[in-house]
Amino acid sequence: MFKHWRWLLILVAVSFLVGSPNPSMDLDRTATWNDVWSAGTIRVVVVPDLGVMHLEGGRVLGYDVQLLEWWGRHSGHSIEWQYAASVHEALEAVRLGTADVAVGPIPQEGLVELTATKAVRRFTWKLAGSIPEPKSVKKTGRKSKKSKKKREPETIQIPGEYPKPLWLLEAEQLNVAPASASMFRFANLDSAQWILPDYMLRSWGKKGIDLAKGSFHWALRPSDSLLLKELNQLVQGSKTRSLRGALARKPIPKPSDRDSLISSYDALLVGHDGWNRFTLNALVFAESRFNSSIVSPAGAVGLMQLMPATATRMNRGPVDLFNPRSNIKVGIRYLRYLDLFWADRGVPDDQRLSFVMASYNTGPGPVLDARKRAKAKGYDPSRWFGHVDQVAKGPGGHYASKTRGMAQQYQGYVQSWRRARQRSIAAALEAQMSAQGPKGGLKIESK
Image (cartoon, rainbow, N blue to C red; front, side, top):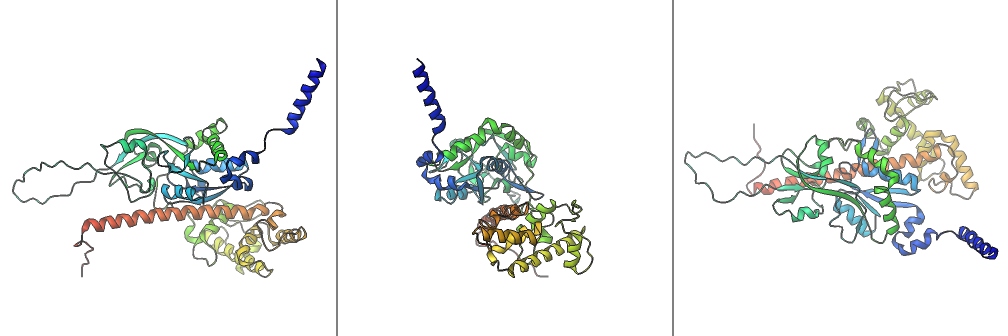
């Protein structure tokens, strides 16, 4: 009897040592995602529609994006953000393999060659908006015969380049047509009727008529089963229940033509040769959260957190660092000084921004020391990512990565927003010209 127990204990011990199969064994069944898993980077293409993503005081907010950012921090995966101007564009990126996950207001239907996660959001589809006024008819003084022809039902709109939900395909009584706008955020509820999710409609402060229950999902390739399993745990698992509840309760701001602005200082952060507003906004947000009156414990002042001595040297005289315009002007001078500093030390153009950002945070000295240590360890001292950043210590070591990531998010959001906006405007103008016919056009009045 003792011998049997002894062998049983040995088997248990061996099972603990051997453990369960490692991830690479399971990944043989999902070869498409194998390289992504090993690299730890997931390529996410976002449709920044209402509730999915927006900018507020430089912060990147939105239910889907914040949920994925939490997952990235806790799962160990880094996220490479991409941006699309429509749901169709995002789904196509996943089909072509340029992205791993499509995120946005995506219905479960119409995902050709793709698979959907569990429901990310559940809601009620509603009908809202204004019915256009009928065109006025000139009075002739004679009674016109009533037309026996039935009046055509009013057109109800959904975004263009958008897969129709199943219930909508079956709703024959609804005269639904794709709009010129490719996102719900550009719906014009003052001149047309739209079908929208209830949580989006609340951002306009409107109600609407209940139509059907609905849900939005994320989309990925069917072969990416491990990624699908992780994302399903994220969107419906017990570990994230409280987080999802908190994010769902956050109000969605009313859409505006100013949604492409990153901050209230955009006008002061454009027109600087070699420095785009995305990078500068990211730097200012990282330094001061756009607080022009802040003073750090070390004595750095204002939006770009400049030390008074450095500012005086860059300005060649005293400067009011609490004045946003003056602070930004001197801060950009300091950035140009750092750019020349690293150019003189042989850092190539395509690498210099990272060195500039790191040294803006810590000063050039610690970065020079990091270059020496990197060279001693066999890294290339003229390249930041994958080389000098591997040995850089302290906050400066992560600063370049942090500001670059924020700038990329700003740029991707703004550019996709603009592309979607331009499409809606161009399509609306085309429809207007088509309705006018060959005799239509603008009338130019001479004085």
